[in-house]
Length: 91
Image (cartoon, rainbow, N blue to C red; front, side, top):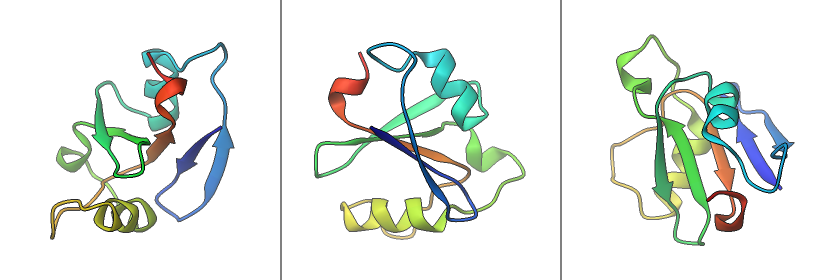
């Protein structure tokens, strides 16, 4: 089950409509039109708005902390919502 992390810190379990998340589902969940995959050390994938930092946004502190704990770039941050999936939830 995937996890959607919002900018206010809430986390919700979400499921794909079919066997795998489609791009349209990710666009809808993340409220964006371009997604970026960030691979976490534990094998999961964090999906974020590729253009999130160019928009009026809020820093997603829980997603940023997860990225940093997974070896992300120091000083970098996640803007907007983040979707965390297992590799088998996407194609």
